[in-house]
Length: 79
Image (cartoon, helix red, strand yellow):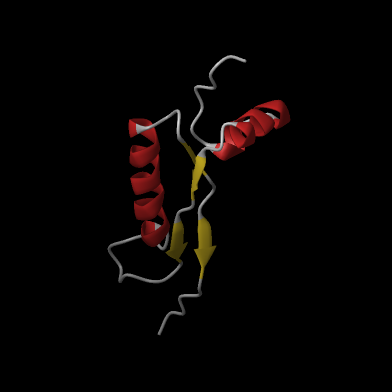
């Protein structure tokens, strides 16, 4: 079994998912809100930050971690 170089779950094939599970890699799950930050920031900023932190962590230990897709939640109404 060769080592899988990918760190993002959504880039894996089904056989690679099975290998990742067998290796017992830690799943890093970024979670963020969708909300307004005024006129200067996009709504995705609270998703981009945890996604970046998880990516950086997985890059440091690529044999031990896999980054799951970000889970966005919330609703930012405009006043």
